[in-house]
Structures are given as structure tokens and as C-alpha cells.
Image (cartoon, rainbow, N blue to C red; front, side, top):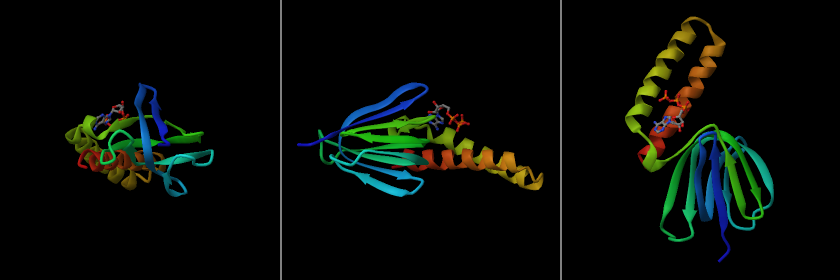
Length: 138
Ligand code: ATP
């Protein structure tokens, strides 16, 4: 059976390295489903979940919270490079919920202060937290 290798690399090291039959990611251009034999491509990822259907067990799906970054597809090798990425089982949901509350507070303060930089940072932090909570609860 044709398969792909999926590797997710962050500054903390290799966060994921498995063989997959199917991968679903969200790029800035929209959702992208990837099967073996996909054309070569480089795309920018949204802060979103990544779904990996493993080859060893058709019913086994891994969910990973990916904090944006780049995906490269090259001859059944899928490489994701991101600032951070966490597998479902490694996510500390209460930490993400605290981060979400903090980001919401910062967003409100940034609004009041008309501080666009802070608003942008808080919005991204909020997206990260919401993504982690969603993946952690799969
Ligand atoms: P926090 O405010 O909770 O630190 P953050 O969004 O600022 O959240 P990042 O800077 O994106 O955190 O990540 C720092 C490191 O902590 C990364 O290695 C990331 O994988 C890890 N990390 C962040 N939040 C969580 C979480 N809820 N569960 C598990 N690992 C996490």
C-alpha cells in the first residue's frame, strides 16, 4: 500500500514522525486533504488542527494542534515546520483554558487602549488556545 511519511518539526525538536494513509490540514487557502501521490507543494498553514490517518490501523486517527507554519509535500514526504505543535494526548487543557482567559482579557484591554499591535498578539494567542482546547477534547 502506498503511504506517506509525516514529520512535524518545531524548535523543540521532532514532534511527530509516522506513516500515514491520509492527512487533512488547513492552509491559508482552505482545507487540504492529502493522499499518497499528491503533487509537490509548499503552503502556509493556519493555526488549526491537523488530522493524520495512520497506515498501521485504518481506524486510528491522530489529531495535532499546529500553531501555523509551513507544510511541504514532496514525493510522499510531508514536512510541517511550526513554532509549536502538540498531539491531542499531550495537551494540557486547563493550561489552554487559562491562556484563553488571559488572551480574552488582553484583547479587551487592547481594544480599550486602541493598541493594534497588542490586539493582534492577543488575537493570535486566543486562536492558539482555542485550537489547543478543541484538539485536546477530541
Ligand atoms: P501559555 O500562555 O500557556 O504558555 P502559549 O500560547 O503562550 O501558552 P506557546 O508559546 O505557543 O504557548 O508554547 C510554548 C510551549 O508550550 C510549546 O512547546 C508548546 O508546545 C507548549 N504548550 C503551550 N500550551 C500548551 C498546552 N496547553 N498543552 C501542552 N503544551 C503546551
